[in-house]
Image (tube, rainbow, N blue to C red):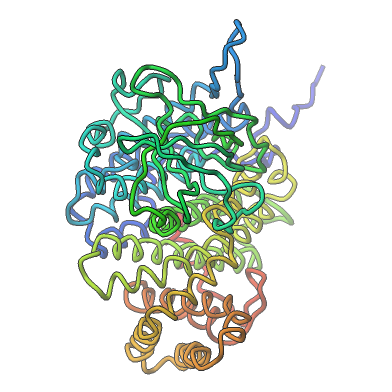
Length: 547
């Protein structure tokens, strides 16, 4: 008796797309390789290639999915009813943090500086973020805390724990550990981004210690070995280093009230906590805690840009991979002109984000140069606004490439999409970033003019760049209220000008031409693929993800 084959037994009849195979996340990304070399980290390529192969293993992506399905759980009390405030994670969480620590993402750019250190770290971040984004949060905060803590006289006591390459997740006093992490707690329920509304208080206890009472609405990475927190100290707000364990072996009374049930970033824990007389050491100048944490935020905001560029890259790769295997209407999706236009547009966006992120990391490597300092101050919030916003659109569009398969949790797209908004919100929402751009312009009016005029002069044959430059200069003549209403346009145009400049200087000519014409030239609508002319899809897709 003849039995018909079931579709699952005939691969060509199945028309389902296989998972991405093992690949080298570094070597497969031309924009990343070229950016690393251009921004001064070419001497570190051997290490990046090694980690690109390790992070590109298909099994690691499967583990990332599992870590996000089984998120952290709070155990506030032990079996005897004693308060322990412990958060338990999936076993794979420690593997991702071990990978991040081994790459030095938690602080190597500060504790082992050198040519291209920030750029190399950024490249590691861009690769790691394509696999598992939640584990980036604690390494970001640890890294951002180091330059602040390094100014304190007692920093030498914890420096070895921050400079090592071993992740130690044990819940122990620092004296018994081989490594440490630092978290952050700034916002409170009544204020959010308005840190001046914070009510937590710090009372001096002698020998540099203070006792803190109050709460934090978002307490990031609650199992970190210490946190930097903001509290009222006299007439102002100061920043405090609050250890999880005290020197006498007691837990510091920081009580975890609950874990936040977040849209994405589910492998990582964010908590609401209460300080019940917790001890902390003041860092930085008294009453200047907000300024201290704003400096820290400039480092974390760079990582928001990197993290969003990583999500864009992974979503794009998944979209191209799917289109190369899936058939519809008699042809593979990748062979259909409209799909090619959409994917080419997405590839253009991803490349521009990677180039900008690495340029920004390069500016952090060159802090001794005043022009680079000014660029970093102006461009960091603008890039965080624009790149993080674009990541949401890119991941949504790539999920749509997958169709219904993209909307279910079995595949990778739903997780990428749920992850995308966090970087736009974390460390200051879009409006806060745009206002920060205006603040930078007011403090250094010449900085915007120098960047804008420099780009326009470098490309005199580009009328679209000149028009964008003229728009930005016109805003400088407006009063403060009028400027604020246009703040999003200012941040967007600033980023697009810098991206256009980078691509015109360093990318293949047809790619750069497509970016300038589609982003700064004739309007084609906000939807990807809705451009007035066909993009060079063959070149863009080959460069984005070699077949």
